[in-house]
Image (cartoon, rainbow, N blue to C red; front, side, top):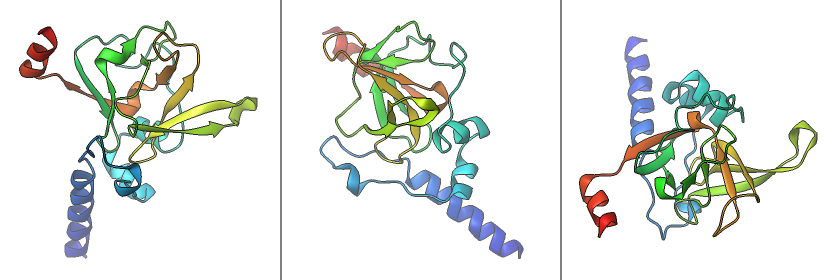
Length: 170
């Protein structure tokens, strides 16, 4: 029995690590979809991340770790590591959630119609694992006019390297 449990644990750890690779910009999302059972997701996510990413929850405004975050880098999916948003696309929407005017690439996120809570909105999900990120609205800044309003708990952050920062200065 102990051998079986160790094998299951090793398989879960391997699945979490192998699913954190991100596709290139040209890959289509259909070739990179991450699929896991609810039990596998629970081993890879905190309870709050699971509630938001897998159960379509939300965090209270002005409580997330990235709503007032200004470091240069890339915001990734907390579930699978997929690159979602660049810090250069982030803006202060005044809503209390991290907001972006465009995704990292055309395959970074997908959208779905959300008819919960007596209204119709556009849900934003990770382009790789379908994890719930937040919603998108058409009241954002130029050049897109879009506001991707995202839960901090659905994100991780990768700081820009010194080389990336130097390239932006040139």
